[in-house]
Image (cartoon, rainbow, N blue to C red; front, side, top):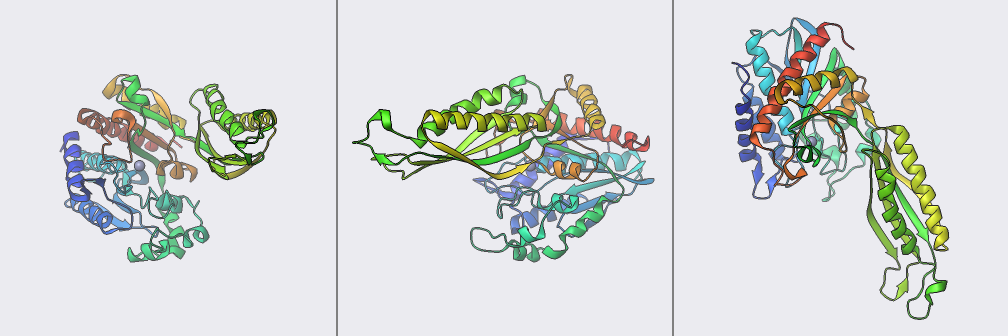
Length: 415
Ligand SMILES: [Zn+2]
């Protein structure tokens, strides 16, 4: 059977039918709906010369042995957020299936290199707040200690939820065995943002995932009565925070693809009759270049100190979380752009704001690249998430070409 991208669209709709309700996709990891989606996926592989096993972290692996043990990995994640979209994660899995079918057909069951399709476990972290669960265990970047203490909103422990799916939390690190012979990893995903739609282009190669610096910025002023305190003597912590909220825009704009967000502001005492004595804001800064990330962080600190002085306040910073940028493999980015050019003409390259399993695979030292397909309205993690069917089909065709090029690159000794 030659490649049939329309079949991928049909498969995606079948999965949507099976695992969504009126509020959207409900394939939250470790739930019955997720397990039945995974069972459904297994039935899609019946008749193909595929070896199946689940690794110690719950990632599902489907292997077609090639003439060489060197392996090309393709994948995505079948899990979704609650009330999620029909394409996030599942497009990567079902497009990879179509590529697998085509390769099995073309090479009579034995492609030149081994092809492994992976369905990562719990990419979203929607229930326990731990994203990239399976891929981080594969990469060896997980922490069993931190994972053991996680609970969902009903108090159920992650440890118990995964045990129900036959995963022992102590042993998830054994998923790193799957790295053996892994020579490259490819992942197709919806963009989940508005950039490609604004460019009026269907596909892009992904340069890497942006690093994140996430901090709490607390301004301290003086609580005072809102009626008796003249404007000239106030020490208003909210005023200083508000100036910073506006200043992060020029800070981000100075750097091409950077973004800065003040997503939460809390005021104390937080009543209508008091000048704000303390204001806690959060700042999330992202960029693909570690130097830019560093510069933006310093610029925001400098600005916050200036605004604190202007408002006769003080400011303190504390880090909530951070992650380094993960650049993808430059030669694979080149192959990805070639593949896109062949099916769609123009081939832009973008950084990814959201994290993906591909970042963990890349951190494990395996050459990795992702491909994005346009998202309508840039909306994701929502039931209205959508992509034009003709673009879904184009993305499957482009992934297929990228897989062929990457298999050849592996055979030629690429690393
Ligand atoms: Zn995803």
